[in-house]
Length: 71
Image (cartoon, rainbow, N blue to C red):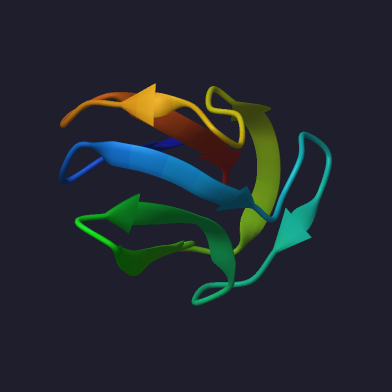
């Protein structure tokens, strides 16, 4: 199980995946807005998204768990 944690706080601008989706390494999972900049988060491995812990519009913090992928 791969856990994607946030590197910085910000606002969730767009969530591009949901549980059950198959992703490839490099696919964009979600985009944060940090200081008016868009910061995409990509899948580090191919696998199935098992959980999404964030929603569009959420205010999030550094080290918060965002997405889990089973590889």
